[in-house]
Amino acid sequence: MDTATKPALAARLSALAETGIDFSSAPAEAKTVLDSLRQEYPEFRKFMEHRFARLHEVQQQAVLGLLEAVPAPDLASVLQQWSRNAALSLHTRVRALAVQEHGNAPIDATYRDGLMQAARLLHQLRSADPSPLDENDTLPSPWSAELQQLPLDLQLDVARELGVEYAALALAVLRAIRPAAGGRDAFTFVEALGDIPLTGSALLLQEMLVKTTDKGLQKAIKKTLHRLKVQGVAFADVQPKRHTVLVGAGVHRLEKCLASFIDGAGERMLLLIRTKPMGGYNMAYLVINYGTGIRYALGLQATKRELPEILEKVQGPAPLIELEPTYCQSQIALAYQMNLETGTAVPEEYFTLRDIIGECNMTFERAIIYTALSDADLEVAKTYDTYANDLLNLPEFAGWTLPAPVIQKYGDALREIEQSHIVVSPALQQERLNEIHTRAMEEVLGERSRRLMRMRLEEMAYYLLRTDRHREALWAVAAAQSLEDANPHHLRRNPFAGALLERSLEVAKARPSSGRIILPFSHLPGGGSESGNEPRLII
Image (tube, rainbow, N blue to C red; front, side):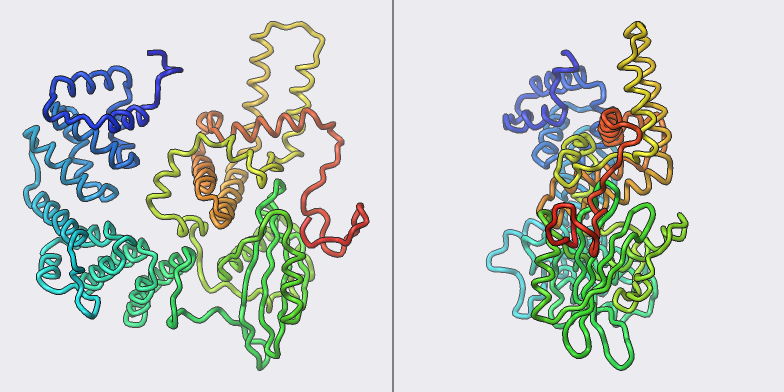
């Protein structure tokens, strides 16, 4: 079959699953299908090894049905990998073990028995009617006794698969597990609680936080609580106190932090609103650049009645999103560090606003998007790196290009080649064009440039997620992760880097070298307005 017209392997598996064929009663047909897949897709084994867990469970079952009907000794190690992969459901792992046994492959009988017991318990808890919970929402015997017979990792798997759909049961299972989750297992337990975005999870974490003296565990619990908070979980009456800053005898609470999207120049607006002791609000309005640091700072004041009007003026055509206050503070601290690294002057007004901004009391090792998305979402995002053009076509990415001062010379060179009256062969002209593209990519996507671009993409992913564009957020995460590869040969084939380079060169070719670039945030508060209208906080 022509590779250009051959459907993707995942699509073929979807079509196979939709047929609903029971291959156990048709082994000859199963062999024909499997041989066809292997012949048409030389990457079949590699795909099964690395991408099986990302398939829908229906597709996974179709593959297992094939392998159950047609023994495949060369896939024995892959089947063993699936049976141990915690990213797969208990049901799928049990069937992978069954296929191994059917093919007479050696298995760990103890692990098999535990896995089958966990899958059976999960099914019984899901189908129990009435609910197996007692009046205190705890898991009574014999359920709790059967749960305790499992290894801790399988107990946690049962809780994860109950998930939000069986929320009360999931929490009851976790509460039953809690006494056994000590030492290093406590960290795994905390991570499992973070996968169940419920208030009860936060309460259980806070109970642990009060009791433990382990600094490392305390830090892990705080991060997980933050992750739950980012996902919109309410902590009810036991929510931790917000970060406060003492000024004189009064206490100012950081009430809210708002953020814009990041424009093509790498700039975004941040607005921090802090309560005043006697009523009203102090506000810090900043424009930060993900590259050079804090660009602009302005202090504002408002009464309780004036605040809604100011927020309405700040809102432009693109909505602002709320950032967790501590995360917003960390972004400002990061921008300030960039000022120091690049030698960019810090606006004097910034130093008068430090009491309003406050100090961040948390360390964020990764962007907030990685705690807002589930592990399953992050796995799916790895398959979305081909959506670079779709991502760049979103309105918020309309102005995104590579740095004009660097890219302009390559745009000029391309324009000169295209407009040249010297006759050269198409092959030679294409060779020169490819050379320019390669040199441009190497110069504009060095280590620091890629780090900044990843940072912008990760922040934009969170913006898209908070503006109800989940799929587009995964596109941005995929683009960010694709730039982690420092291999220049891989970068040349990177979908996002390639699409951004093509756009940047097209813009550069159409722009004279001396052209003036107008940036979205170049008109700042207090500046003039060419249209004669009242100046806005966000342009």
